[in-house]
Image (cartoon, rainbow, N blue to C red; front, top):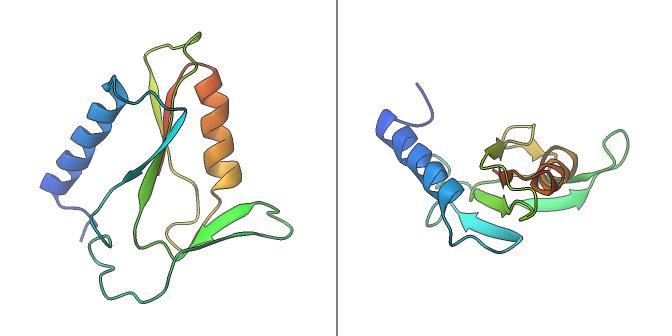
Length: 120
């Protein structure tokens, strides 16, 4: 069974398209809450999300136990805007997300190159 139903997938797609072309998103970074409360399927989870600096071999900031997902928006550099957007999904599923190397650093690099970036 898929995690999202077809109507939910369509709603998320429309949200992403709206955010990509919105003129209101002018801050360099912005956090967008995806659900009011916990994500569907995680309502009974009791653990809290944690972020910490992992040791070798990762040696990066990682986040785990995510039940209230957010999306971080990185505005494109105004001098190099190219009209394109990227959705970046750090690896690790919900258990451990490499938010530094596979999320924030990639978004910052591509934003400098003119891309609107969204890190889930």
